[in-house]
Length: 99
Image (cartoon, rainbow, N blue to C red; front, side):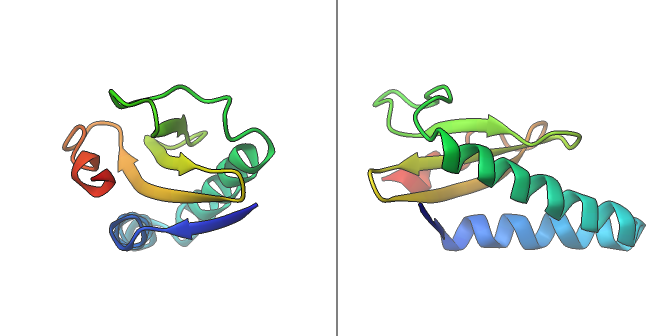
């Protein structure tokens, strides 16, 4: 399974990583590790996570130990990561990235 990051999702990830890095190199490194582990979960069972939009295309999975959710669009051969969304900020801002 191949992963592709929407340009906005790449920006989300970089900004979140930078925030953690300003506070703790260890927290930043562990954040990336948990995001990577979440990508592994998606890779193993992309259709198992709950739909988060009306069309049922986008799905979401929480990142362990951090207040983030990965929003993604699965297909037979790849996954597009739409957002690395903070759970408490700007709910559903990523919706416009799907259209």
